[in-house]
Image (cartoon, rainbow, N blue to C red; front, side, top):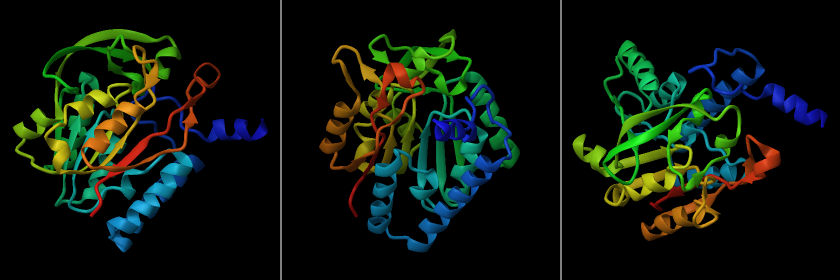
Length: 276
């Protein structure tokens, strides 16, 4: 019990601000961890060895820092983020010769991130104001007071974020599109790494990558939202897509839910890769 109280104190607060300015033990521990991961990648520079390290980490913690899966010069896609810190971490990992595509549906987050990109003159970072899914069109986007809880409205999906706080405070219409279409419009024909953290739309994002999965090398995705019609998490359907497209994968260790008592353990995140 005492350990849980200490851990709760050290954890970052809920994202009620776009970037939490927090300079304490937790903050500097994270910084050191990310720096060490980037250094590890640059020293080893061997995907087979790195995949063994990545597998060990995600199976132990259901967490994998970007710095350990992004190489210098990579083409990277981040599907969903509201933090400038995320962009900074990606840029520091890909360097000036890499390329990053950031897909963000929320208008306020998009403008906040775009200002940061322009201020830093990161010409190799492209910001796309859409929600990724398996179709092109429009959709309803649910807005929460907790920024990390925003998500596309889907009556068939239950996410543990749905059950905490005061729920959703607003609903906006957003443009939705497939990763295939977005990459085609940008004339990008390969993806070294894609991270998908979209609160229940992960399966649909992968379904919208029928072409681009053929030239994608590494994937990190959440899996624990529940498909109410099938009464199961998204894990099995995500694994089916990965196997069909010749990915090897590691399922992470189940993690604590944001509402532990009601939800139980979250099913582990997945790291997938093509053998080289």
